[in-house]
Image (tube, rainbow, N blue to C red; front, side, top):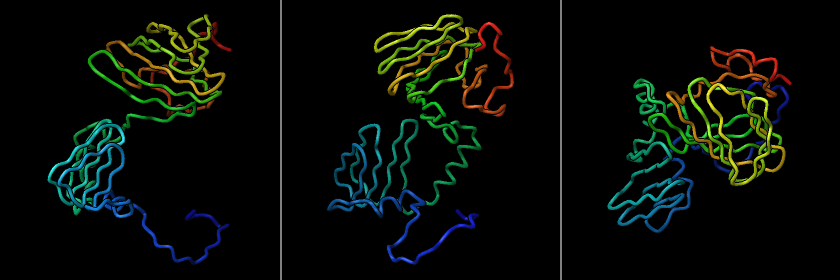
Length: 233
């Protein structure tokens, strides 16, 4: 909008906040009799003027005043509301320490839908994939991990090497490392659980081909190769 040459401006007095900090979010929220603002599952005892953001789990506070507590799936922030603008310094510290929380979210969006990391440990990772109607992942394979897909909602069209099949709720498929595979959603929203097992479960262990979203080479790993001719469509 800052660069458009086709805009009109009308003056209006409605107040303004860019909600540039967690403290600003508390200022516009609906406070209780003790001045607390809560979103999600919060239990506050002897707590005043405090913001609690808890979309994923119960957060309980006791004896706090003028504090903000932000709980997400991978991190918890507890700070004095007067220090809300200092969150940027914490993010810089995370980046300097090489922490993935500074740039990788548990839920990541893709043209075909999204995936959310549910658990990760030594030699395994569990994700929930949501594929939009008509969504189609690229034809791909992995060198270092196998995958087990379990459909929990919807219908999936799955290709593994030369075999194509439809999977419905409570049905599953196993994909070995180096097998070419693809996931498609021909109907309503598709949800499935993906269990990855192997010596490496990083996002860069992927070799892509035949991507309908035409993602360029920056979205492909350095070891990108072409799919075998027998799998091309």
